[in-house]
Length: 209
Image 1 (tube, helix red, strand yellow):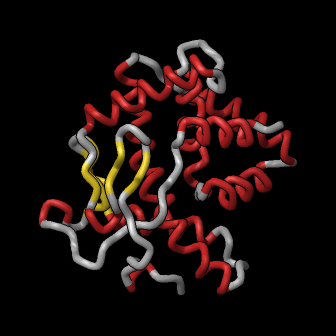
Image 2 (spheres, helix red, strand yellow; image 1 turned 45 degrees about the vertical axis):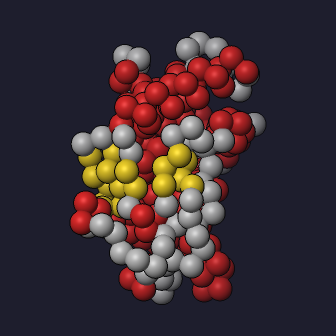
């Protein structure tokens, strides 16, 4: 079984999933202007969110318009969540003086590539199943390997490993004082994901073409 399947199970066990939709009809407060979220002292800009979404959609240019429209809101939610989640993992690793190096990323990516039938197939699976753009694959593996390291040498899919990962991510999220533009919902530190959202929110400039 590929690592991507194992990761999906792990993240499902952790509750690291995106809750239903994002944004209220009103605009963000001045602190959020131009930003989708503020994580610690770093801003995740709306431009970054839209650029990542465009990269994911570009990889599926042949997708039917109706399907693209149905999946658009999920892609926005997933994108904002993942950009925040990446910074939470980074903080958790730094707090524990852990690091994922390039050779580990390369080895994991190469192993999965062989398993699924090549780099192109892997890239497409990650795009479709995980919303990962082609230029974000190494970041994806950095996340997944980071989660395993946060288990502290325990089985990351077992109860003890799950508890260790949860604690690391909750501690990191708390320390980062994550603020999300009200348009996109609220970061729930305990659930490690976006919550408090509604379905009818997509602004015109990010509606599917």
